[in-house]
Length: 335
Image 1 (tube, rainbow, N blue to C red):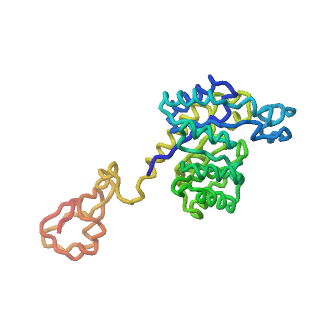
Image 2: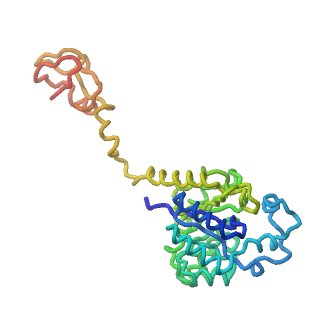
Image 3: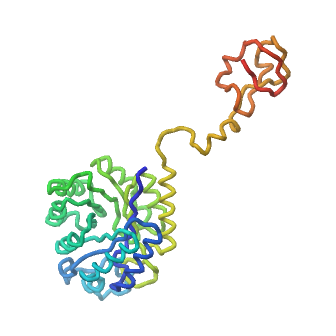
């Protein structure tokens, strides 16, 4: 199968610190991810002063009095930080991606030369945003947390009508609860999306652990996105639902193993097991000493290993034939 594109989602787990952001890039590269992704936004353009935190954000930050705007403002990356992180990712041989949350941030990422634009779940119903990105002619990864099938359909129509080819769009099944309960993952919906819209599909994971993204690959995901952090005990809204470095390494390794394990789909003996055919299968043998001229019958034939002789599938063909020579007990029969 084609290699799964693994996005190590740093998101805002840098806590507004460029040095932590660089360590996240190093961690993603060491793990073998294909890309490391951040988030680009102008806080005042994205969040009103009246917007409250999500419940998981309150729990993870431990500060109920802080507004969502106040929390997110501290996590904003300016243009200089983008330049520095893009260059650092290049030096580590890992692709830099970022999710834009407003129109000026879309322009910024295009200006910086990004070839893939990631649309977050919350923007799937943002018509001007979708039209702008659709007109860019770039590859698009569309997350669909909280979305109904009809909303996905409408978003795809807008992106295609605006100028993006369907082949350049990958739709990620997702759930936006951090962490997502396993009972709410509904991983089969990824296949529903693929069947409904004939698009490439993937999965953006917010569950604890690495089992679900691995399962998603087995179900046909071509892109996997997973949040990671340097330490789950760090302060911030997303750390608690993120993998730590060793877990990220384990997830990438497991996905690469699953890629190999999925194979071509053609049912035929593999190269490694071909040598076992004669050992594990059986042949028609003499159950006792047989004299030349005797008739082969159920009384003087048996089926035993090895499988290097006449296959038992030819049992009916052998019965009733005349022995052309003497055979000792357990000797492979010849006709």
